[in-house]
Every structure is written in structure tokens, then in C-alpha cells.
Amino acid sequence: MNSSADTPGASGPLEATLASERERAVTVFQGIQDEAELRRVRATFLGGKGSIKDLMKQIPSVEKERRKEMGRSINALKQWVEQQFDTALAALHHARLEQALGASVDITWPGRTPATGALHPLTQVTQELVDVFSTLGFDVAEGPQVDLYEYNFDKLAFPPDHPATDMQDSFFVRTDAPKTLLRTHTSTIQVREMLSRKPPLAIVSPGAVYRRDDDVTHSPMFMQLEGLWVDKKVSFTHLRGVLDAFAQSFFGPEVGVRLRPSYFPFVEPGAEVDIACIFCKPWERNAKRTAQCRICKGSGWLEILGCGMVHPEVFEHVGYDPEQYSGFAFGLGIDRIAMLRYQITDIRLLYENDVRFLEQF
Ligand code: FA5
Image 1 (cartoon, rainbow, N blue to C red):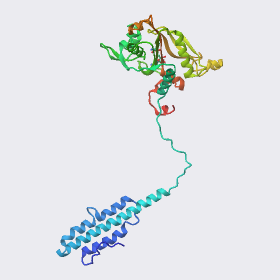
Image 2 (image 1 turned 180 degrees about the horizontal axis):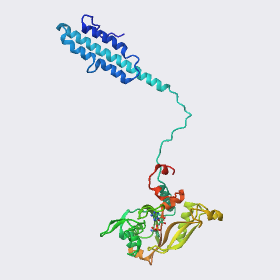
Image 3 (image 1 turned 90 degrees about the horizontal axis):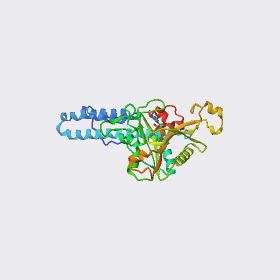
Image 4 (image 1 turned 90 degrees about the vertical axis):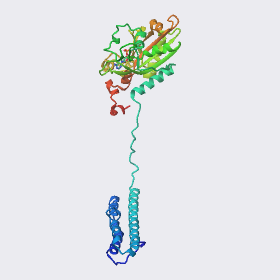
């Protein structure tokens, strides 16, 4: 045993306390399994109310010539206690480490998959759509979600009394001049691109749009992808060719496309586009399955977008010569495409951010 502490002769009560505290320090830390308990015991010696403080306080009562020696002995005791404590603490840490290293690990257990994020289904579909149209030669254009009323309606040849221009249908930001609103469709990009570029141009533009709609297939905020191709001698046949190529590349090579006449103020002629139902697959000629299909309601067709040849009045509004140039435009609902692809029956699921839903994609 190290006896760096002076062993005082038991010539007085102070010396007796020093000797007994020294003995106590040898045994008292042994066998303690808990670090907090070790520290509590240490404080009984070295704390503010510990025995060593007490001993210090008693020095003035010792004869003058022995005070120095007493001070040294108390300091030696202090070091001795620290030493005992450090040894006990190191032993405790060592025992804990041994225990941790000794614990057996079953390496046959399946690993825990770390939670990873993923792209939102609408982002995935948007990226795929952009990929398909990029392959067909379209650039990607972007524009603001708050835009001029003029670009959203007037330049696209909407008559002033068209129901879509009503405050009931659109979210207005400014109702005084210049009127601004949350764009109700991505067709604003047609105007912006044509005002800023000379033809020829071929662009697609995905983005969020807003309308006062809210039910299982209509959301107040939703996503559209606009397409526009302007050049000399662009014809309806080109439009048809691009739509066929897109549908077959995106939905599968068997999927047919049909166009039905429709009206949009900024195209002439205009059409609504259906694809053959990708759920009952009418091209496989299983009439019974098609008749019972709940998705296409037995028709064999699903509506996916609106399109048409750019109206000459729109060309005039953006400074293109309609005698020289022609073009086609289309606008598809990205939410609708995502709902078809993943068989989602309520559009609101796409905007609720429920991880239990989103982690399926
Ligand atoms: C338009 O918005 C036209 N701008 C499309 C267009 C562009 C036509 C270029 C011709 C030339 P429409 O209002 O039909 O058209 O909307 C297009 C698609 O957006 C719809 O087919 C539908 O899939 C989707 N859509 C419309 N309203 C909502 C809504 N509230 N929630 C989700 N999707 C919607």
C-alpha cells in the first residue's frame, strides 16, 4: 500500500481523525458499481461539507509549531483519497467496457433499414414526363406562379366574360391594374415564351396552378404540364404524332390515343385527348373486362389532356405572324396522370403529406 500520506502519531483527536479517514478511504470505494455513488462517497471526504474541510478548520486549534506539519498531513490525505477514487473509477469503467465487449452479437439478425427519403409521386411523374418530351426535342421552360391576368387570359384570347376569368374561379392577388392572380393554367408560359423568343420553338413547362376547386378529383392547387411547338408549317399531324409518341413511350407501346373535338379560346381547332384505358386494356379485346372496368367506366378510354393548334389571335397578341407561322399546344394534368399510374382514387392524398401514403412510392 502506498503510504504517501504521513501517518500521524495518534497524539491528539486531529491525528486520530486523519488516521481513521485514511483507513476509510482504503475500503469505502471498493465494490461500488455506480459512478454517481462513487462521486457521492468522494464528496464525503472532499466536498464542501466533507471530512477534509472539517480537518482544515481545526488547524488553528493545534499548537503553533505543529500547524505546518498538520497542513501537510491533511494535503497528503487529500491526495490519497483522490488516488483511491481514481483507481475505483477506472476499475468501474474498465468493467463496463469488458461487459460491452463481451456481449454476444447475433450477426444473423436482419439489418434495420435506415429511413430514407424519396421523391414525391408528383415529382417522379413530372420528371418522367419531362424526360419523354426532352427525347422528342422539347426544351423545358419555367415561369412564375403569380402572373399577370393579361398573360393568363387576355393574351390567350379569353373573352372578358369567360367563366374562368370570374373571381369565383380564380385566386386574385391584385384586382387593380395591373391585375395579378395565381395562374389558373400553365398556358401563361405560351405567352411568356412567345413574347421573349423568336420562332421556331418547342417547349414543355411543368408547374403548379390554382383554381377554386376542391373534391376527390379536383384540388385547389394542382400540377400541369404545358407543351408548345411553333415553326413554319407545323400541322395537326405533327400534334397527333407527338401525342402518339408520348402516350406510347409513357404508358406502353400498345396504348392508343383518340382525339375528340373540344373548345379552348386559345386554340383552333381544339381537342380533348383520351388514351386507351391502361387498366382494362381494350386492345386485348376482352369486352367483358372493359364493360366492368370501374376506372374508365366501361368506355375503354381515359381523358388525359387538352390540346389544339395555336389560335391566330394569340400569335397576333405576341407579335408572331400567323401567315408565316403555325403551332400546336397541349396541357395535361400531372395529378391525373399520377392518379392513373398509381391508381390513386382521391387527389387530396397527393397534398396531405402523410408519410404512410408517400412511402409507398
Ligand atoms: C387547360 O387548363 C388548358 N390550359 C389546357 C390546354 C393547353 C388546352 C394548351 C389546349 C392547349 P383544362 O382546364 O381542361 O385545360 O385543364 C387541363 C387538365 O388539368 C385537365 O384535363 C385535368 O386533368 C387537370 N385539372 C383541371 N382542374 C383540375 C383540378 N382542380 N385539380 C386537378 N387537376 C385538374
